Length: 295
Image 1 (cartoon, rainbow, N blue to C red):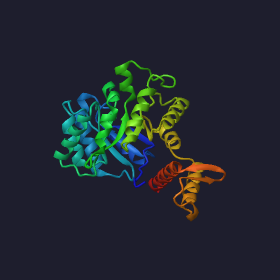
Image 2 (cartoon, one colour):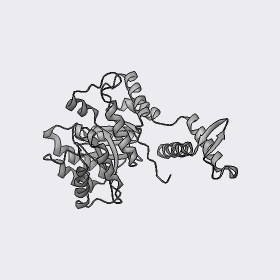
Image 3 (spheres, rainbow, N blue to C red):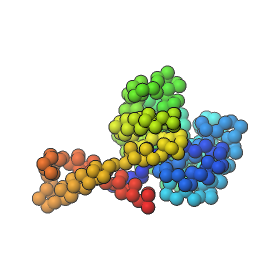
Image 4 (spheres, rainbow, N blue to C red):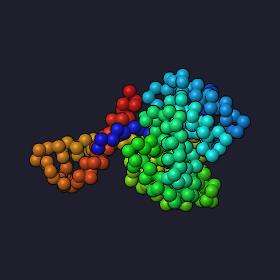
């Protein structure tokens, strides 16, 4: 498994129009910060927010945190200028909203290349429209090209609820099919996928339950709207010490000379297959990446 894992357990939205919040973000224990120019910014503040986000990125001081700029839609009055400014400022990724077709990926990547984006600048996309749900596989397939920038899906569950009438209440049972479909599409093409936000930041138990549900579905992390959600998100989407220890046992057992070439072995009285070894290597890679981020 050659992939280099980057923890994306906690992905916190920060409104680009609030300079004080952008400053505060430098001290938060988030794996990823989304500096937002879209939903969190009113139309009369769009250009101010863009300038403040560019200034924050230029100034730096965010340590090992992954920095993503969510631009306005490419069909909006601000989207293309947002993209060009973000490319110049040099975040880790640009997040494009309202993606609905595979062709939208080509458009975004073409504009990034035209703006002079280095190959290291990745593309993230919001999965938040009914068409995106129907076309999840087609969108994810764009990551299969050798020169692809597409790296991550972000679920926009509030927009999905608004456009479909499906409820976010309870166990999100009205959305489970779409969430699972998006996870399958993302994983089929090696993409990370981040779960949608939980709106009531004061409801700690509700957040915990939804984060755990997202982890069970295969999400790599959760988007957040409040710093108070950081600690539980980091905990839920981290492998436990027992899981890490067991993963290392499996890896060590398959590495023994007597197990070379075997597809099935026994570890501590339990049958273990090669697929469990792959899962174990992923667990250890994630744990090591989290440790590196914290250091």
